[in-house]
Image (tube, rainbow, N blue to C red; front, side):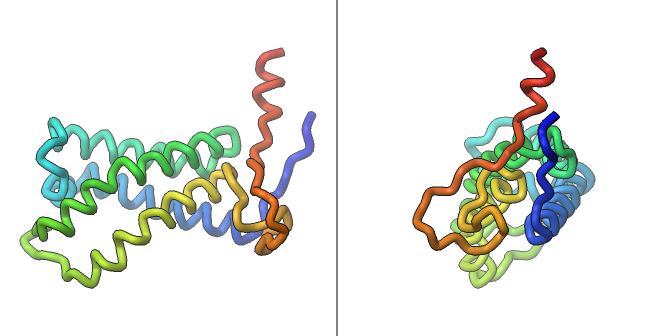
Length: 161
């Protein structure tokens, strides 16, 4: 049996916060979808269905982040999810789409849009897909070496035996 690696506190705190955020967002997608449907670009087919599916994906991703066996894949899929929903955020900002009858100030969008790559990285880091820019002790890595994946994939070998 492979040794169990314990993540440093910053990673499991970040994982818990991200899982909580995605869980809340997923529940909101399912219980109050109107605002999410409003910011969905016109080229997306069946916006209400897409919003419901994305809500379910957010909930599944949140649960996956908290489940050791699913964590790596949850990190990858939540990162891809953040990339895929980015056009909705751009649409809301560029077209000044009203959500719930009110329009969000441009200052919100000027902060929110550049944070999307951070959300992508956060999902990858929380899921153990990357440890960049930290070393194995959770400290900033200044060695210049590329970061390596940190997932313990030993469960796959065991399940194939």
